[in-house]
Image (spheres, rainbow, N blue to C red):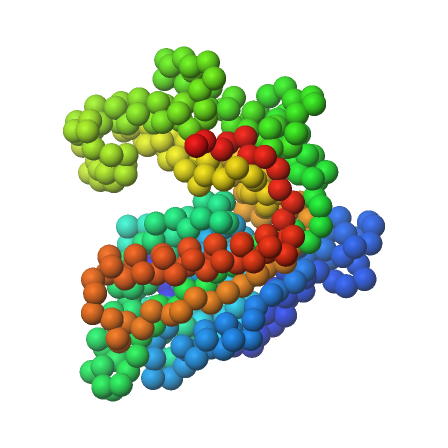
Length: 426
């Protein structure tokens, strides 16, 4: 059941300071000093030492917030846990009482005391299959001149240079707020304000990434690759994991075939089996098949064993798809992208220990980072007459362009350490 947030301004202000020191920057004088830098709270749990946001970008976002307008802030979503820490820093500067959407498991799944804490911090619980109450509350809150923040990509994909397909919630709520606002104020405005942030290490972290890769290899019972470069080791881990999926499907990898080609063959076979399991047309693309499988599971008409089989097929397809075409597109790969690969592997494959569980909820970075924050041009729904789908195309384009431009600027300034990309596929 949805429970509306009860924001406590004093607590929100206090948590802004805690977030800035404990979650992001760390404590100066301790964060680089052994043994204190081994304590995440002194080092900064997300280890984001610097926040780079141009004054003009911050002012652009702030101008969209306030009385007489409803604003839905939509950041990209490249990393878990750090997402809310950076998002909280952003809204503290432009709309301190903004509400933020979070997963039901965080807001309501940690006991009544924690639920009370999160609701006082103005978190809105996203309840799967029952989001109407959350949307209605969001519109009400936005109409009061406070921002509402939600991630239009949905879940984290661990791909900081690529923006995934967007969900329509922010645009739909923005249009609903505009309609209600215009009932009493003909000049009322509604905005969807995209924000992008790109994390970049502030020093060489190859050694730390190598240690994390060794942990992944050991956890997944993969022999360490002596003499291989760091990106080749990560590629080898993914290649062996794909081999296990090939074996489960009864497929044999063609000698010399690229990861992309092998992945395509596995997904085709899994899609065929999923279509058969839900009695759907085998010619449907995977996105349609997955949507239909979710509907098929909700209806619950099949026996338990058939449901288990369909659910496992759908989960396997989604897991394999998480290495998307963006991974094969560039000839080089940065330390930041290697770190994302490792975090994705740990999230998707490394399970069963307390260390893995903690990492899933509070992933630890390989070293100190800078968050480069940019604010693309907001979409004014009051001046827009296109469809929701057309608005999503515009928003995604603006977010991706801002991400790409930021990455290009950092590359030009020597901001990344790069290697040949073993995933590259022409």
